[in-house]
Length: 634
Ligand code: COA
Ligand code: AMP
Image (cartoon, rainbow, N blue to C red; front, side, top):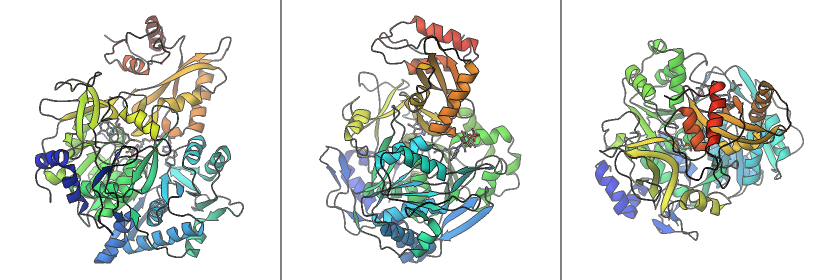
């Protein structure tokens, strides 16, 4: 039962065990947890140890057993293939059990990893739930990642099996997945034992050898697999996210805390109930897709919507309105960048006119900062509350939000409102002191993190400690900067580390720098995420040439663009390169990317006292001014 936000927030911090055991009662357990909260061998607070459950059962079978088998579980709306399909809870449960059986037939056992590299088709959701049914650990890799990135994830997760598809569709283009998969397996040191490929009619992939299987035949031949009871602390999935280096971090999610947190969030944050239609317009490759296309809505018994299309040009900027009206969506969750794209093509929202949006009650946005102009525009064109909320792959569910379940409070542009129960949020200065209202600082969460948050980085616990817990001992470092106003509203202003956010996609500077540095003409480089009116941020490559190299700027730029597209993926939007004479660094050799970013964006910046040579900043500024990448700052 939800009482008041203030009361629950306070209780969640003062009596976390009591608060979370109440939330845990809202899901069904095969065995109630032995411990609500305790530290594991690594000293990390874990939730619901000894509790037995199965996340796929919670998301599927349970609803069928409760008589909701004929309710639509998943609507697949794909304007790029002119398809709308509705799959009931019963049908989805059966397909998941079959695919789980197919995995067992490939010798996948509990704890084995399965990589899912697929476009936005129902089989991607089925694959995730099939893993969950048998206790295999899935790792979904966003379909936009190129072979090298996929290979890194294959090596890190060492999957027994990879599930993929013959192609994805980007606007009018068909993107062949199989050559990318083949190349990734060729580069990777770890070789999976089997690959299963979903053949799509727009482009079939040749399958070679006994280790490659055709999905349809494989699924048809499989036996239904029963679900297994898992421990709350068993892993559900690994989702790689960009850290500050080129190597992605495998965020591990466990079973029990995740199910409890998502179930709580569906009512408390999103105001949804059984049977509501919920649409998160993201991709299954990102955390939003995991939590709010797949697990959250299905655990809650909603109808979830899987959309294979774009906000524009599939076929036009009215697609979102069409989908919202046709499927009577109640809660819609999307990244602001999608609305910037719509606003650009249809500023007065003419294409909304013929659609009945009366079912829509809430619009949630996250993934990047909701810039005030987009917020104002949304408020003008929509009659529903526009709710900004903030979270990360690491937490798996929102850290700050205006919470529908407790009754909405006044929204303030640029603010995701207040911390969600479970998150003891603080803004700290460089010395670890809480800053005064209105002052910027590092946004952190005091230990313990609530259920659902990551307990470790897959295979590298030291990195977990180093990345999140070392800067301020006892506090989880979010990597975001921000402040609170006099009334406690939280404002998230952007990353204070080397992570950037391009069209709602999280990327690291290091990831692109590794690729750029491989070019034979490049002696040294820095990639910084600079402000962009459409995509929020885009990467800018600053390179130093090797002595004696003679290459046209345009040739170098084109070659580097192709390298980043080929190694990271086109969605990185790496499109601009500038040759600079030197790079600003600290005396210990660390490139001052943040100062560069602030300088290029025209934001105030402080030159650190540790800078090696302040004149370098002026040299770089002068080159960027000449190239028109930067404007004169009055
Ligand atoms: N597979 C293959 N390629 C992909 C891809 C995918 N899944 N996603 C993007 N790309 C490609 C695009 O086709 C494009 O290729 P191009 O350079 O050859 O044209 C490139 O990556 C850049 O993509 P993007 O930044 O997405 O720009 P766009 O102009 O193609 O689309 C939007 C603009 C606004 C429609 C798109 O950015 C969008 O839908 N954003 C929302 C993202 C989102 O929902 N994030 C949620 C995270 S919570
Ligand atoms: P990801 O892990 O891909 O979900 O990206 C998380 C990052 O996106 C956060 O650390 C923020 O930098 C940014 N982000 C997500 N939601 C918001 C928001 N509502 N406001 C500001 N930044 C956001």
